[in-house]
Length: 428
Image 1: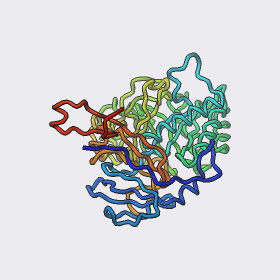
Image 2 (image 1 turned 90 degrees about the vertical axis):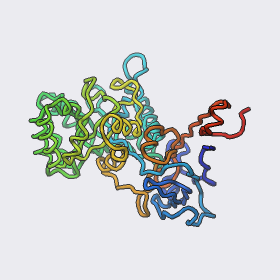
Image 3 (image 1 turned 135 degrees about the horizontal axis):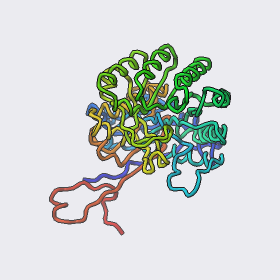
Image 4 (image 1 turned 180 degrees about the horizontal axis):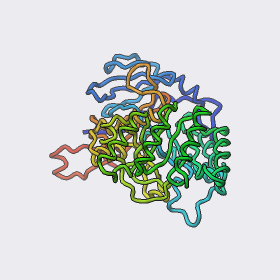
């Protein structure tokens, strides 16, 4: 059985203006029409999908959509899905685990790390990334400015948003943090974050964050272990009326609470509309703890909490081997978290996009063309062996990974007709 890489588009959008050295203009790219041919959907249908203007224009049976003048990508053998999103990254510290000596926070170094991390995650399929960035201490707002610059350089490839994460917000020491948080929002941080667990007055920290978020109309995304039921109850009571909403995570401490206490906390979070982002691939360093368990996803979902899954650390102190792969996060939720494969994938796609305030994506006409094609025919198989991937952002192919697997010409391989990926002719 041949399993060759998909056909390249017959032409690529080009223009004379771009960011970050040769990156095409996003508006011009979105004007290009692209046909995805022979894609399999999760309901078993094989379809052609026409993209244009950054959206899905039409979905029809194979061969039913006119294509003579279109760029075309052959997706035979691929499952077409709404693209994942990454709701919990740390671009400022990513890729620092192997460095010698203290981590550099020079603006150029932070920008390079944040850009490379976002591109790695884009290659896995995440067309939108929310990056938590520490502010304050000796580095001030420098790391945030660097990540904002990375966001500008990635325009047209991936959508990168930033969460400003102050260390302290209460007391004398917290006054500077609060002032800096205000400046961060003015600079362009679109989400207000932080770690109330690390503040001497966690409730005061929550009040400060929620007040500022209400003042500026910003969403809130907080780090918390979630091991204090009284604090979670207070958070739910304070956050219930805040729009556009509150997200907390990774909440591994909820798994260590007695079942009745965890259930009550989940019910309160659900009633207040507070979302939870779990980190099944490992810790992040923001809570300065190691070995946290994953949040009790089934319990939270049963209570009605919207649960998304993020990556957390990407090869930094929180997880030196972090991959930043949303499909691995979904795999872990399916293999260890007790979710069905479709539910697990939803946690890194629909739920993640919802937590990030992004529009819904379906493989239907009219929806944003944020898509991921993975070699396979069912979600369970995709989560098991998700090697070959094609990533589509704003209606164009922005990343492609083609895996090649070959078996030696043994009698067993021939008799079983084992699949071969890549070239079918003999090698040189």
